[in-house]
Image 1 (cartoon, rainbow, N blue to C red):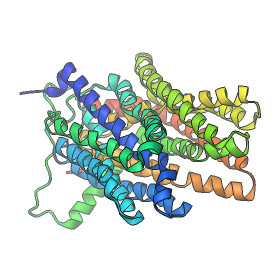
Image 2 (tube, one colour):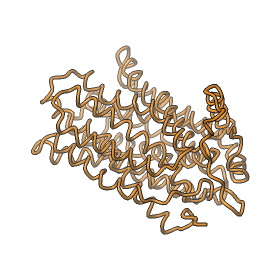
Image 3 (tube, rainbow, N blue to C red):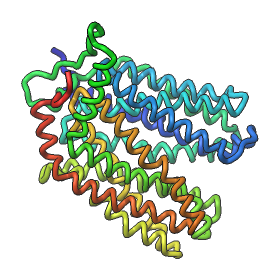
Image 4 (cartoon, rainbow, N blue to C red):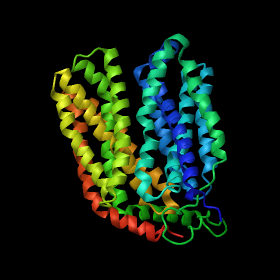
Length: 438
């Protein structure tokens, strides 16, 4: 029997292919924000109408992610991954023809569908190529594309936007995804659980339930039981809650940081955006990679390492964040801000490694989809608005302190939840399909 997941060379090829496509995913996600002023020259729209581009994207993303999680746990994933990449790439490239604001808004909704499929299925797909002891660095490499993609979008818009227009930028971002989607179709489907089970043979693929005699009520009960199976894993539960609080902090700071630097620190509009992009790109890139590789090394000493390092990293960001908030001196708040972002991004690979490693193998796509919904609903969806409300009644500086409070909650949850991580890892290694309803 062929076991593609046991070939290290092919596993690295798969990682490099999916990571490159994920980079385009995040360039595509941030390109709308980077060319916002150019779009508003063509379409007369308000701030709230422009904000709908982001709101609609995340709403569609959240609604469709559970559907792709369900499909990914029951059917081969490579075709869904490839079709998702084609959809978001076509929607982006096709936006060059948008004659109106509403058509461009619709295209961003289609982008949300495509990116939801890729974002939901890629982590469990990669998990079936690498053992647990390597997953933190694998997820760190995969998710280092978040700060890299954001930086690339802003650099692209800054270099070509004024001279070639926003439509050219959309075309430039969309077309490469169509090319990279083709080799995704030809990827070998890894055997689910082959890198988790200690048994001699790989776990049998989960087949979709028989349609005959399987009522809708039974389907609802099965979905309910499957989510209960995920929550039984205490490390999965605490990781999601801690990750949501972390996303609240990062999302709120990312949204308000340029405005904060401009109004509170006295930095010009252009420089505030330049500082934000540069610091997030450099500190986020280094922090994501450092966390992943450090987590895999620390697993040699304690199997609680992924969550311990995550919790300690979030807590370490707090004093630097406070110093950056209260200090008026550029020589203080700029390096402190860079240090805070480094420690916040330290967790990206670690937390995603926990999510895919402690979830029953047949439910990994569902587990990632649930994580996506939880961290955005509790995290970066409400945080910009809540920080803004505090700013209305008090000051923006007081609003930003909400993000610091969320860091404290996140760190405590992750450290507390780490006590269950070794047992949950052992349970999955002993029985990859543990607690999954028939």
